[in-house]
Length: 133
Image (cartoon, rainbow, N blue to C red; front, side, top):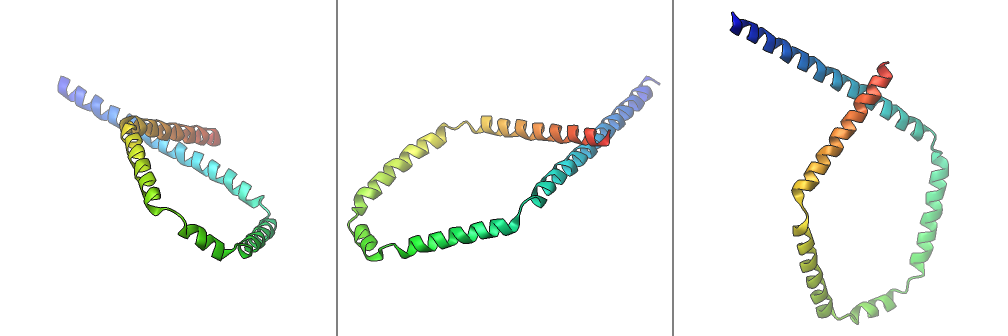
């Protein structure tokens, strides 16, 4: 009889945990809806015509700058470069960067990323609960 009570209690515990996880997922969904709604309102506030005019002005400015470049002088400057010295400089830089990459603690970075994801999920759940209330 005791085993049957334990089995029933375990099943009830599983049901409670599944319901709680489902509720958290639903609240995170509501939180995501709230975030997307806010972002949509921000996008609606943007004046795309003004942005288009701004981009046209920048494009014209870049076109003017490109037309002013003396291509022949640039080619001569490139020919004057010491490629072997540049290659050695780049090799030294690559060795230095390799040392820095090896020094990065990947496990710590993954743990930090996991903590950030958990924080974001918690924030979405909180926003969903606020919206549901």
